[in-house]
Length: 558
Image (cartoon, rainbow, N blue to C red):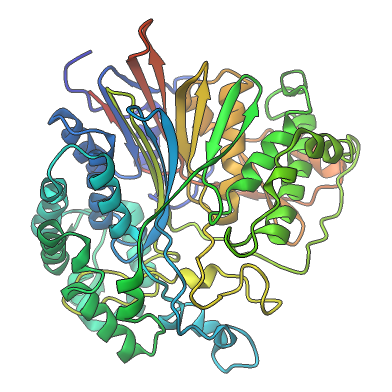
């Protein structure tokens, strides 16, 4: 299996024909689905061009960290509505040399000048403020890419951007999902952005070529000058000018003060595995609470996606959702009580409160969180055993819809995903403090070695989708493609259960009888993942990758 291999799983082939990237659709997985296999490395991302660029880096001798920078930069070009230089995210890595998992936070800090009252009534236009320039927070992605490259990369920094620059300069054909997202947002674009993303005053359509000359120039500056081009250099000055003109809070001082932060991850034992994810300031800990509660039940006996199984997961996920609302906070100011929340005793006590015959009412701690789906997740693993699992976003599609002229960069609207009521709650927009991201990149260890890496976009559904995929792998023995494709559920505020169409009607009816308020949805998330098998000497010998049939992504290796 040493020849170059680029192929889409059966599920992803069907998805590429039917479902827009980044948009949901009814998923009814079939038995023909299979993971992609390779012997030297694996990449899975939401766009085939990004995946292929990442594999090319691996083939050139780069490692997973090099490939991750390339994948992220290409996604900026080919999924401009989802992530990029003006965005933020959460990265979980495994260094084979150090034999440890680390969390790299690229979410940045909330601008020092933010006044959170502008996002609440009675401020006139407070809802518009949550979407536009005032909602722009410090973009941390490029600092994180550079930190990952300097700490662990093998190849020259400038070489990691060649694919992105070529695609931005020469263009590529729009897929249906990107075209649909572009069509929905086009009227909000500034004139200079409309000239790039449209033709004759109309948005580009599926199959038409998107050329982004300004973005190519920006990428060249970053390739030549490094992250300083954004954090105080020419690009930073353009961002500062655009923010001042639009009345935003973000300033060049916020950019200069930004830095990528490395944190120790959090983890729990689930069955015979160790499950790692991002620690605070990310709010991924509810994912581990859900797994902890489910560890108190015999899930195999209950049966995959049976009413009894999904009922218990729904009850567990409601409690974990409550915990996020109640306890999320900056680890240096108001850290969550993880020692208690991630303990066997706590799981046992809370699991005993779950009634097998009736749903409980959800009573939130007076805080409601929002949902966002315009995010991307990718995974990379190399032949040395290094792994990157990364979630990156702009917030809403095309973020704040602000593109500093001449840069080709869309700026995020990160602050839209703060929680503004009641004032001063832990997830309010606290000036100068860390942004609390809801991303949940995950790495699973089995028999002492990293075995699986996965993640998904989806706002507050992220921390519910990831545990379901983990249980699919660990409890039900699915391969990575089947674990990703299997139908899902998700609790949503104020108190109802989103159920994908692939859940059998009889199961849905039983959940309703138990007292759950059911709404069928077209899809939850757009996950990507991989697994690794090792030889007797502990060297990776087989990689399997999966791409979500809910999107148009690609898993590929060589």
